[in-house]
Length: 302
Image: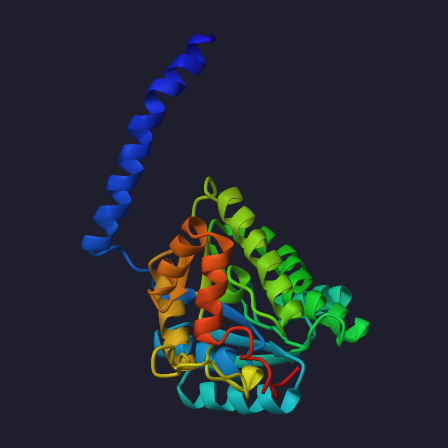
């Protein structure tokens, strides 16, 4: 065996132990937080829902500029005015992230008008809310274009400059449904699973890039109009998250350079159970929680 490979094999368990100890210490000791005062933050889907609260939270925590992208100008304008009243410079652009050429066009215009984006928040998403056989083909494509491919186009548009500056952060507002799917939202679950794989690959690819990081947030059902009408069986045990809390935890994760955030923390248990329990047991858990029927009353925004 090559001596170099032997040396790597010997050092591997030591490096693993060091990484585990380092991660454990970071939970106990305060870490250096990112100063947002020089950051230009772009939030896709920034006109309403979680995106709107993200704009407020970044502004409150001192971001230099906040830029909003979305498809509905009225919502973008209203949110922009709210952020301006907080004392933070805010701009908005009408942009459908599912349209590749539009993304590149608006990205160029943004750089010319506002400057370099240093924090990109991929938040834009849609859900069709139907089973596969009841779904319109165009609606299925729309979900994949916005929820998944949109991240490719926005990241390709802004990441190169972040790497040049050695300063940047790519954020994805994902969903716990990327790990534990439910019936009645096959388009959304599929797109979010693809989005998670995208972020996992991107995060690993940027490990050796100084000053540039990634954060993926995987929240449970959040109380926004997107999933209006969705009902879990025991709302007292599984209450929907407040969008302002999701926004706050997201900004905190960006500032502390945390790669993956599960909301609430109990979602870690779900991940462990999914890897340990047989499928039949998982089915019983989902039946108990009402996962099979929670989309029956769905009437959210697509």
